[in-house]
Amino acid sequence: MIDSCGLYVQADGSNGDSAHRTGLVCSLLALLGRRSEAEALGRLLIQNFQVLPGVYRRSPYGDLWDTHPRCFSRDQASRLILALALLGWKSEIRKWLRAMGRRGFFHQNNLDEKKLRFKFPDVMGLGEWSNVIRGLSWWWLYPLLVILDLNYLGMVFLRKPWDGVSLYVPDLKYALQKYWTPTAWLANRLNETTPWLEEALNNHSSRNNGCEELCGLFIALKELK
Image 1 (tube, one colour):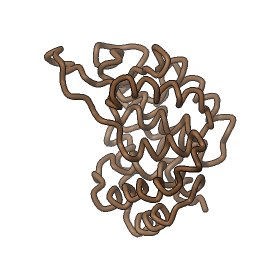
Image 2 (cartoon, rainbow, N blue to C red):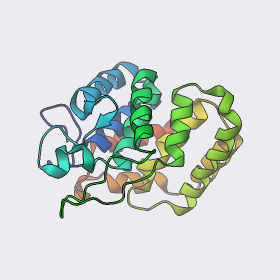
Image 3 (cartoon, one colour):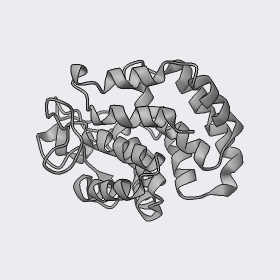
Image 4 (cartoon, rainbow, N blue to C red):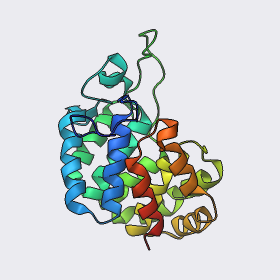
């Protein structure tokens, strides 16, 4: 489902994960070579979710959980940063990385939305570092990428059947497109033996209150050679 802002939300209209879903759609479009569509959506990402340089929110409208930057978690940020990396928007990645650095590389979600008290935020993940290195074309860190891409092997075996696919398969495909590593190649070979597409289609189906537009994109990604 697409809301009046052009952002992707779940079937019942809930927009609490619209940054995640819209970033994911943008990433898949870029991976599939649909560049003009991805760039248009990327501009919407910046326009609607960025409140300060490198600081984002889940949604431009809604309650505290939706709009407060201190509720913006790693799974939301990771899809946005992947999209920016695929688009090659290095200045936006640098803004985000500088903001992360000022927080000691912890994410923004340090507010408990129920008690309105401090909570321990998410730390920057290995997959995010991989995407930043590739997105900023830091080719001299290729040896480090070989190690960081071991993370994908872990994701293949330890992924959550519900939404795990959305959090690592697009990243893995991007890794193989830019700065291919043997660890990413092995992870992809192993991943293709799993029912990852079925898991993605189930997660994003309307019967599970998902975002059906993502289903066609994941099917196309599976067919991509």
